[in-house]
Image (cartoon, rainbow, N blue to C red):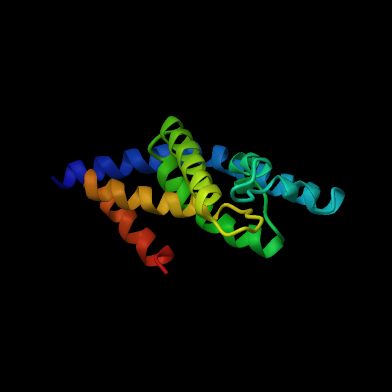
Length: 159
């Protein structure tokens, strides 16, 4: 049993290590997009955010998670995006991309349908979805690794 746990941990960390450059590229791209938006475009891309119950606001379902209001907003979304994203990315790039796209679309549609009439931008919905996915994984597919990741996620990001 201890050998199985050791093997599971070794596989998980090996995959996570391989996927680290991919996650780094995602974060670098997110930061580059926002720096261009803030410094060169004077936040004009923010108009592509999600505005509930508006036909033009539908475009925000795709773009809102990529845009952030300011440095603090992006910085404090980057940390949980990186950590929780790496937890999921260690399950494989295909799983990560599928989970990310589904979460982004579902949370975007929910905000578009039920959100207050305000321009919504930021990756908080995706981050919350990652959190829920990790907890759901631990509940529906309990392994030492999934339970450990859920405990870490709740401890650090549960509030």
